[in-house]
Image (tube, rainbow, N blue to C red):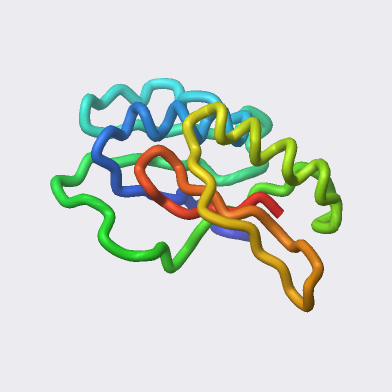
Length: 122
């Protein structure tokens, strides 16, 4: 049986970051988690991991070694769907960091969340 696990983010403003990721992923605040220095969101269908956000004093200083890929469809080759979803996430507070291609073929859009953590729409 697989272990239950949580993905954890350091954050300057954990509640703001949790609200962004909840909207981006269709997650909800974790019931009963009430902490001014932390926030936690969970998959309402209980398929994906919980994601927690903990206030830390230091800011982000380097590229992520781990990141989330958001797939708007089952295929990684649906460029119009990827670009639409990237635009929706930018409207929620993400910033565009670049587009990636391999062998001249579009692959994914790189974005940053409101605190600068990189993630991809692929």
